[in-house]
Length: 333
Image (cartoon, rainbow, N blue to C red; front, side, top):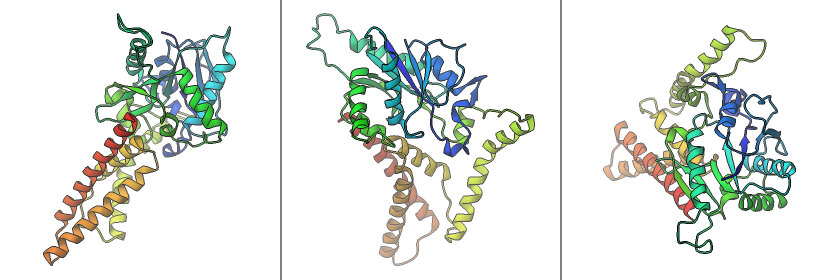
């Protein structure tokens, strides 16, 4: 089975204080190097991001940039496909294209599973004619909680090119969601271990994934220790901010499940679209507040903080379940 690869490495890294996520290090390799190694079986690889020297890892890697810069993953895919087309020789086009975000340091086993799945899709079972076999548009990694990782997937090149060309032609590719790009594609789900599809968006993610920030040229060991300390203190900053905000909102007596709320925000961002994160947490909090108000009205008295905590947990659980169901139902269409 032949495939090309597009590695997306051109994001702003806004939640990493501008530190380029592709240069975070896991066991002596940068995230970009790990992504290139994960795609090592590709016949050609295009990295959409700043150019770097990767010759020691692969002689088939080239670089491209999305237009405009930081135009989002769909714009990055458009640029990657355009670069692959420009490099095409003798009219040969890979049947499949791997799309891989550079911020998943443990994605290599998932790439193997995706390749295996499309290989099976490309080979009809014995006794089945090619006309009888369903032609899927690709294979997408799905975590145990039902989250579809569209940037860890193998797409039929002709299908991906068609939808991306149309979005580019109509001016809809810039800052578009992957959901809008894939809406018309028929994809096979490939179950993967959660760690394989776990991406790095924050310093907390980096700590959990065993990644450390890069040491910029001209800095010393103390600067590196300071940067690592930033990762370790993020939870402390969140805790302090939560306390200050609770005081400002006169909610000092309420126990806030910070990790639960962050988890809900993360699932909403990955299962729906990123802007769904604040919207989802806001609506969950609003629902909890309204529920407590109704209970208090029925009881004819104020309810204790434990009741509010219970209502918030119920609302969070419902929102979490809804986000996961939304992802499954949308991708099943």
